[in-house]
Image (cartoon, rainbow, N blue to C red; front, side):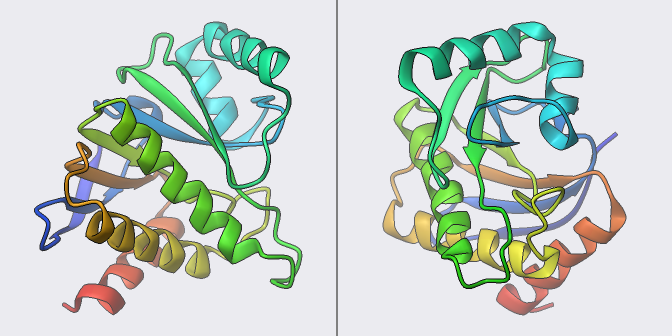
Length: 190
């Protein structure tokens, strides 16, 4: 069962939430997958999405790469959700942490904003996003949380007409949820 631990309504009316729970069980229009450039969903969040959603998610991902080539860091692709309770999976390619001197922050911000742009283009109302790049890609969790929250605030300020009315930062482990709570407190107070 997912627990909403923090919620903030932006001036535009969009709602940001920090949720502790299983991303693959989120009842939202789309979940964001922390993907690699080849959409090979072997481990981490990506592996969990395929295990719960079924091989159809991987097959659609393979077909996408075959048709379009590998993704660049910061870009996204969309597939169906297989057996997940959501409608779509937005596969966002975050950066591998290389110490911070290789545009990692900008690329993580791009992955988040491109996810929200695509969700808006599809008319989706709710999205759940994990801590992209903070697992095996090694991006520092606290910096990841700050960037993702900041990217969402800026996206919605610049796109008040966005169909995405709710963005849930959903992570299963307490340490990651804790850094998102800290990012919320730093950004919104409380």
